[in-house]
Image 1 (tube, rainbow, N blue to C red):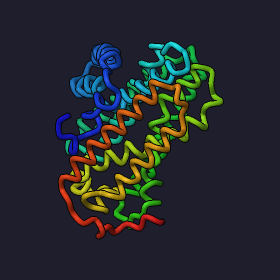
Image 2: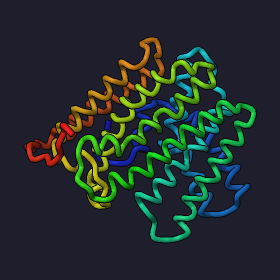
Image 3: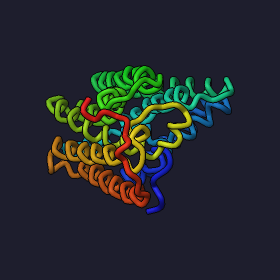
Image 4: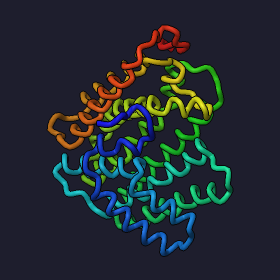
Length: 292
């Protein structure tokens, strides 16, 4: 495993989900279709990034894994709709977090996400309950992303509680593919279990993301727990491993496919900790109040 302590979430797809070429192939085909239908070079660039983006592939992988664990065959139309609809989460996030200087670049991020979202929902016209679950999950994420700006981008004093409130969007994001799966499989009784899992697993992945982007966040003015804590990030790693454990306890042992994703993530976190701890530094100067 190469150095993994830096980079963006899309860099770690293969470590967490294993082989995702099937999902990428589906999205590559849709990207070609959309680029032809909406003939614009800037839109095409964003469409063509979709098959490689964590924001689309992760919910697809969770949907497929959960369906298999429930003894159901994943519906390729639903799988495609999830990947398309979730692109907007990433493109809109890019507008807020990494606002381009050129207006045409901002426009392409917004409109490519809007187009793919609506095209995805269009694919679910015959499965209204599945469409409703997808829309509700994504809208909850959008709502929480709005709160990120207020809680983590305005430079206010950070506490553990404020940070966890600020990253709640990752809980909703993690749940998207899983909630759609239990809806499609006719198992809405599993929703509470899925949301408990999504909280544990989501927090763990957000800690990982914030650890790997700490330098970038410092430059852009985003407040995160690892950024405030400083190396070697003892508290952040502690919370990340506790979150992984919470996720494990929230799902059934026989759900082999979802458990595999959790195991892969835990292994990635362990390797990340090894890389960070090659740099020893006193972390007692952390300015955050972990009890609030």
